[in-house]
Amino acid sequence: MSSDQHSYAEISESKPTSLVCKICTHTAHGVHFGVSSCRACAAFFRRSVVLGKKYKCRGVNKLCPINAAERFLCRHCRFKKCIKVGMTADNVQWNRDVLSINEEKPKQKITRNIKRTSSPPALYDISDTMKRIEQIFSEPILPMHSEKYREMNTLQRLDWALKQHRIGQKDKRLITFRNFIDLGQIVSLNREEMCRVAKWMIHCDEFRDLQLNEKMSFFKLVWALWQKLERITRSIDVFGLQMYEDKIFIMSDKHAINMNKVQFDISPLTDLPVERIKSIFDPFCIRMFENIAKPLIDIKLESMEVTFMLCYLCFQISGKVLQGRILEASEKFMEKVSNNLHDYYEKDVKTKNYASRLIKIMSVLNAFQKIHSDRQEIIDLAKIFKIFKVRLTEPEVNIE
Image (cartoon, rainbow, N blue to C red; front, top):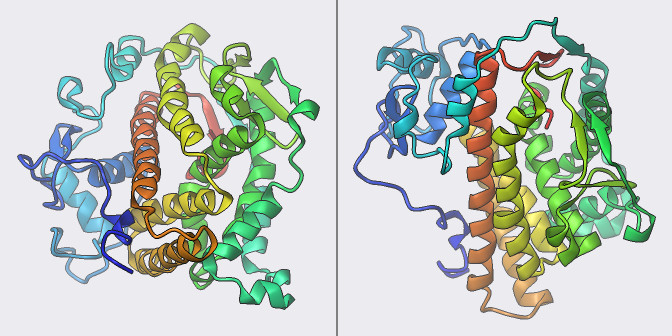
């Protein structure tokens, strides 16, 4: 495959070259938690603080090198260096953070209206769901007995699994629109979706070869992102341009919501007024429709391209954040599926000139990750300031 055809991994947002991350010495993207740092180190620090993570040093003297030359960074020594160079949860410099969105920053809206919750936090127990996911990750894949399945390449198998994931999707004429949603309904729906996403993941050889604890870390990190992108593309498949024009989002095989009309009961989530929460998070919803849905409608994605996007999103993020064996598996996996996508374009679509189309797809993926990064930063700050009063039995699991 030529270099331009393998360019998926090289297509990324432009980065400023004037700053160096004080933790890992890669290119910095701005000032996060008071320190010039890259997004990866900022996200690592946020996650460590919010979840109260305790790391063990990979070495013997707790002096592991943390720099750009190291492929796998010791998390204990990385976090220690974050603290050493001056990162603190209370030291966020709002006016210098390049990840902030325009107008009044959501971060400022949060800090300007800090109101610690007065009622006791609601606890949602998802331990049974996590046990079921562990079982899924330990079970054999039944279609492996199928000769047709065995003949498929990696991307084809995951595309087959995606179609199985969507097999119960109702026609738009049969979909019921919900006008009211509460947090309990969202958690209940996500319990079902988590198991379905897990069943998709096991069709990846590199994922199945990971240890169970690695699989669970991978899943907890990316499952909600996979679900969100899959629902966006599925909403487009079912409703077409109407999805963008009417701001329709599919919630399940049978239900959808109109984002302009639906009402959310957020009282179990926070004591802040719903108008304040909407003013913080509505901009991210708008960006999802404008920067993700609209371009994807214009591209007119094929199923194999949707599958590639889901693969890229999961393995790119998990490898970068979790490092170690997961990074090795991610690099091996992405090389395979990029070759599979090349074969799909040449043999099935019968075109060799697909670089411009791939650039558009990667641009959408970059935008998706940027929106997620910005939104996650707000959520993490809200957790630090105890604005949210909901707790999960599995705090590392993201419930969107």
